Image 1 (tube, helix red, strand yellow):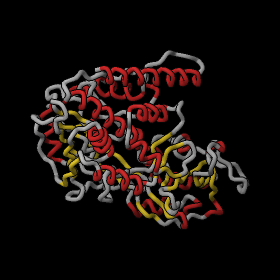
Image 2 (cartoon, one colour; image 1 turned 30 degrees about the vertical axis):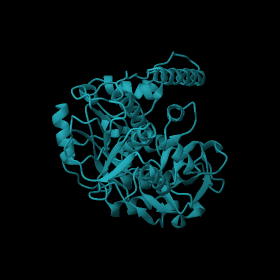
Image 3 (cartoon, one colour; image 1 turned 90 degrees about the horizontal axis):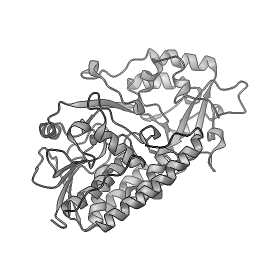
Length: 438
């Protein structure tokens, strides 16, 4: 079966990562994408690998779970992460990208690769006789999802996801905002900090928790992933929930204020020009009119021009532990692999990593070679082991975090993270050596 042609459904982050890896290893790839024919509510452009929620790919710190995952991916040969680094915009210790530039460059890489045939088509059926990677993301076409459900024998699993508003930089009142990083970290001042006094916070808070939201179908069954919790939902948990979350004022200080900041909102550049800003952590499902009214109570945003209001959309995923093995291969249909958020990983970098991992396994599979699982002492291995072996009941998507990484207990947390880093790099090298010798 050497170099047999494969099918990939979906040209998002996972699908494009998988396609480029396989194509660069001599495999012919048919890559199907429906967005030119039928867009999801979150998609805005015709480019592939579109980032729809944020432009942040999280921390670059090698001692963070997200930073370590990136190191693992680079060792394993990630193409999209290298493109992301080339499209980076200043963001302190995080990797944030110019979204349009990133999507455009990924698209050009896909189109220019002789081993990839990009097909604009809405796929609704799955041919189980053909080696296939399903990587169509959490907003999978409903008909295709129904057919996938028939294969895995599962009722629909879903949660709702929210995205944050984007604001015109010129509309921010700079007398109540300043550029800087929390605790002064990073060589450049990458966040626009909008600070609030206690009275201002409570005026904003009370308006927020009483604001009207968009009515959702089947709202009584709403399940929200913690990593994309709508700000109004978080606020209703406790009066200080925001101040310990996206509005945490610690490490921020504007010398022009007469009193210590009680809360803060951080804005991050959306592109290299810096003419648009994302409200960090402010995913929302408020009515557009309510977003304007509520968020304008933040002093620096009193005259804010909203370039994009926040929205909420339905995200689908499979019950991975019940129907998928540790290689992201359907247990009953070995020709079919599932990658990205549909498989139960959560986050941009995690979706890329999933696509890369599945592509490595698919290459081994179509060449008749053994597949190898990464150990849970690596971040990627921990994620893949979680989605394969987590309890089937109430299964929820997972992102990169140290809570799922297998590690020796130590009192010194910094030393523990250094140990995890060291072991992870060793394990990735061993994994690559196994692939080479296989």
